[in-house]
Image 1 (tube, one colour):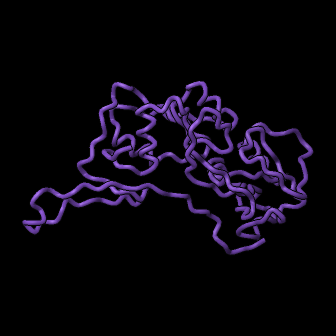
Image 2 (cartoon, helix red, strand yellow):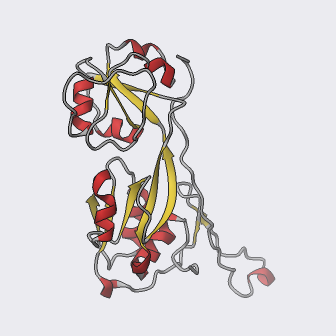
Image 3 (cartoon, rainbow, N blue to C red):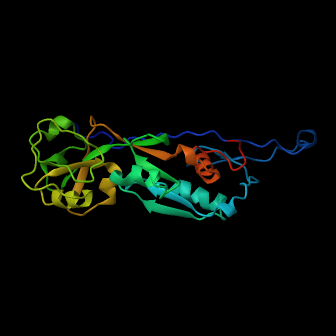
Length: 253
């Protein structure tokens, strides 16, 4: 165990902003060009006079999201930029995310990798640290972070909706039947009979007062990506891609 180190792993970020030239005559008159504002959340520049094309005739945009995914900042930009196109957020389980896209239940989705990419376009967005959820009374809480070797001899539960497919060397299998959901596994871990490994956002999603978690620093991360059907790259999908990548409303695709 290695106490005292930071438990988080920064998300990847990117994107290129666009700027607008100042009004004619500004340089000659000594006036400064029109100011550009930097969005500290996305790292992109936005222009105050930017305007998105009118796509209101296309209706609502259906965005799927894996449990724990955090599309909030992009949804906020969508609402400001696309007031004529409501965004419907649909929770999509890890086991159902490929089918939801293939069946057209959603226009695009924030999915957890791996996913069957046949017929899909996929943009990786950020990686999540894997954590071990345990009882607040567990000896594992003595450290600020863990390694896989620290989990040797622990009872490790793998729920039916597991998103990691991670094998822990030297861990013990539970003596009880597999639990259906991550929420059930977290509740069981809180009793002290075992632990469950999940992406950090799921540990936060299913937070309980009698359970806590510790990062597992050498475990594989969980990647969240934006995916959509390649043959259904609609103007609304392209608009959302632009928002995720930090493009301004009037920048070229």
